[in-house]
Length: 299
Image (tube, rainbow, N blue to C red; front, side, top):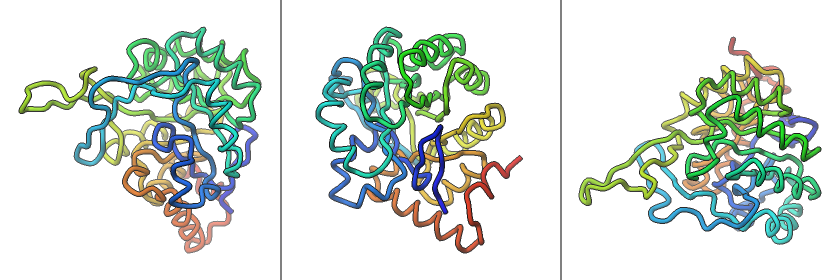
C-alpha cells in the first residue's frame, strides 16, 4: 500500500532516514527495528576521511537546530569495508550520500561506490558547512550541471542529486541536474543561518554561519519541493522539517515520491516508525489504496 519506486529501486514505504541524522543506522537498532524504514541515507561520505569542523557543531534554536559538523566521516573506503556490510543486513534500501571538495574527488569516490552494493548514490552538492566545494556546487546551475555530468559518467548506480535551498534558482538547478543525468532529485538541505552568543559577543560557530534545519524550515522547503515537482519528470524526495505523518503527507501531496526525516530523529529516535504508521492509518481512514492517488494533487 505504501511502497514506492525511486529510479528503479523499490522502497517498502516512502520514509527514509536523512543523511547526517542517522549515522549508518547501527546506533538506532537499539531503539527500533530499522528494517521498518523505506531506506537509510548514510552519513555524508567523502573520498578521504574527514575530522569535521572545530568548535560547536550543534546548536538548538527555537523550532529547530543548527549544525556545522563539516562532513565528519570515515571516508568511502572505510565505509565500504566497515559500515556497508552492517547496513546490508538491515533489510532496507541503502543510499550512499556523497560529498566532496573537488569534482575529481567526487568522481573517484563515485567509481568506488559504483562497485559496491549500495542501492542509490545521493550526490550531495548542498553541504553548507565545508569551506571548499560543498554548497558551492549547489548554488549555480552551470556548476551543478558539470559535476552531475562527471559523476554520471562514473557510475551506473541510480543517481539522486540533493539540492541546496540556497540555489540561485531551485527549478533551473533541478532541470540542469536532470539534463546532466540525475535519475532523481532530493531537496532541501539546510538553510544558511547565524547564531550569536551575546555573553561572549562572538558567533556560536567557528565558520560563523551554519545549517538551519527542523520545523522552522518546513514551509519554505515544502514550497521548493512543490516548485521542483512541477518542473522535472523524475522522482523527487522531499525533506525539510518533517516531524509528523501530516508533514509527510503534505510533501507527498506537493509531489514527493518519498520523504526524508532528519532533525526529528534527534528528538525521538523512532520517529520514522511513528510517521510510517501515521501514513498507513491516514490512508486507511481516507480509503486511499496507493500513494499515487494523492501524490501531486496540489496544483
